[in-house]
Image (cartoon, rainbow, N blue to C red; front, side, top):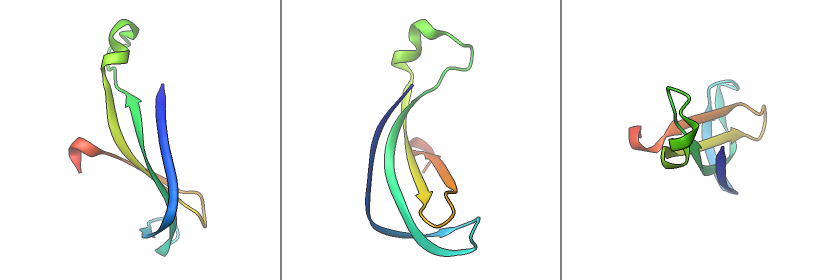
Length: 68
């Protein structure tokens, strides 16, 4: 389960796949974290992640915001 909030505003970042700076679509997603498969409490274990997708090759990187 994920809640998405994405936008493109001319963000240019280095793409590890392309090996150079490329435009990226960047946004925040709330992803469910549950190590033990406990679906009952899954709604309470969502964490924000920064998601960046390279517009040239499609490579997607996801970074947990609490770890950024």
